[in-house]
Length: 332
Image (tube, rainbow, N blue to C red; front, side):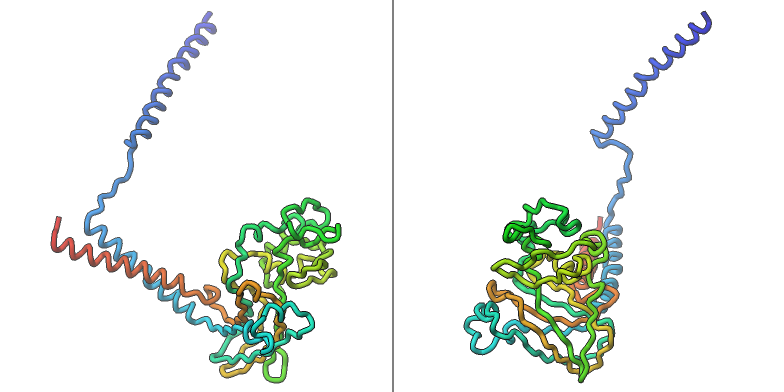
């Protein structure tokens, strides 16, 4: 009887505790819904507002100046060559020039180094008015095929470049089909500058997005050739020019890395560039540029970040001065 009585007493205790917890939960939810929970509510007095804006200005302006100085320290040589590399007889019809395979596409450009450029020196090609962000263009690829090759059969997303003569295309899609194929050779004095084209793509792309045992198959064998061809004996994971190209740009003007020059260039050095003007940008009014650039701890040259920091910091200082004048004129 004692055991039974003790059990009954314990059960009744638990039953009585349930409404108490339920009531606490309801009270908490009510406070939450009414926004009456304990909270920190700082009072922004004029002195606090002025001090915060001044602090923002004193922090942002130095950061902007340092960032802008680093960006301006990057040296660039930019040469647009698409118009100048067209022979005189084709100036009025550039599209026929680029499509005529019997016309030589070789071109020579002279670049002068104005200031000392410390290695590594990066080589980029720049395309303008080229919309890699077009919806149909971006979707025209198969990431699974790039990784697994012919083992992956569903390439419907690659239309219209998914097959040719009844055979699948590897890599399929418009992005790979339009691979950039201008080439550059650099002569410094009497010797050719060695251009390192290894490790120019993201390591994550090389290791995880392009198969080391996937080889090009039936690529650029159709009647309409888009861009460059690929070596069928080299796996996609080692064809870094393709990997760089497949990372599409969000803006119509973009640069993609071509390689690196791993020796210093002195001021007043003259670089002779022998290039093959193969890529067709004339059909859509695009521009092609060759860019040779050094780098800083922030990367390439881009003044936007430094200018943005300076602008925000200056605006904060000006606002703090305005608030200070208003507070002096009309104190609270």
